[in-house]
Amino acid sequence: MSAGGLKNFAHRYRILCVDDNEFGVYVNSVILRNEGYDVVSCSDAAKAVAIAKAQEIDLAVLDYQMPVINGAQLAALCKAANPDTRVILYSGWLGIPKRELVLADLFIPKSEGVQALLEGIEALLHQRPKPPATEDNNANARMEY
Image 1 (spheres, rainbow, N blue to C red):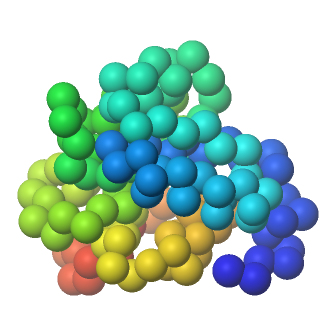
Image 2: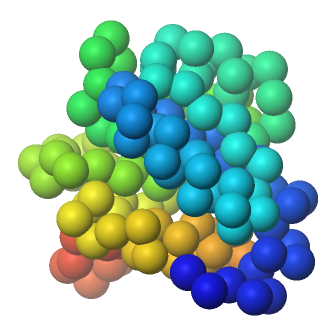
């Protein structure tokens, strides 16, 4: 993403990036740091819970399929630690139950790529208070919840 304006403001946002695939979380973290974000990353969901409780996190980018707890459960724990934390489920798994998708603010399939992730991050970090969810909001895969 060529986010000229974003790089000027990204330094004040801390993003928690969690994926049990160590290479995937490394790549995503490097990309987010290059965009100017302060990134805390790990490949262990249990460690991510401790991070969410101990640090102020503006946004969490979470994989869904992970051992111990899944990304939706981790999203709920992140929001319990800080209700203002925005959450993106960024996953290759497309069969996430709707009852779990509502625990995140946005779902982006990994197949949409990093550009879609960066756009989602920017939208969530810069948006105004969310309007109430409607049935129309559930029509597409990349949705706000």
